[in-house]
Length: 279
Image (cartoon, rainbow, N blue to C red; front, side, top):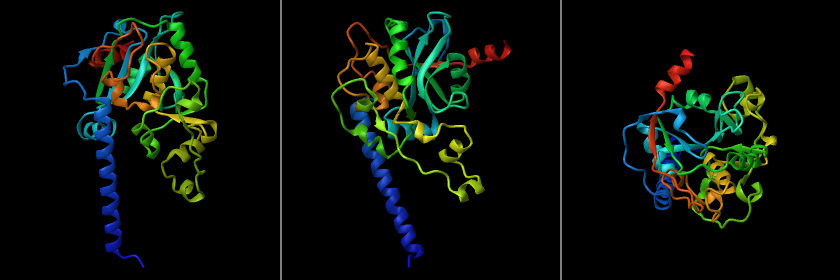
């Protein structure tokens, strides 16, 4: 029969193994993705200066900043690419993300103003500006390949071990780019009665799509890299899972000929969001 001592020994071993795994993951992330540029003052965002192909970043401060650097190798944990609709001129963010309905767990085009309103609550925003915009039509078509696919967005999980290895580029099919979807168990009667939080209950409530809808899962940075590879902005040298999130922020993903990204520029969106509220 297990004793209290056995429990605490097991807990200590679990924590030690988890901490060691984070150290290894962080070390590989730093080696492969480089270090973030030194902190710089945030500049007020002018939406009119954004163009198709710019990359928007979301990051954290405080304890979450430390954890992000350990796991991701960077404070920038989320990324999407700007796309200006050539018909209406409205700016969107092309990304894989999990927001409230109707922008739930999926690969999607999110209106920039909605994106700013949601993400400004996070500690940090940034932009990586591209030297010249790719064709809006080409970028849209590239993104549509994944937008219409059955791809779910995943957070930190065990199968992130795939980022520890590199794989040569094969094709742009989801089968060769992304991980197969997990088969999740339906919520138990007990968990439903207790109203416990979790993906399964969100699915049951209709807030998130059912797991059966997904054939593959990917992180936001894998979606971004795959899209920009298809659009001819990033070089097609390796599959997206060969890069850590820090590789995007620190310009470690090889560019196609003629394209170049600047360093991360920290942003403040308070004025823009306030103007949105007033109008």
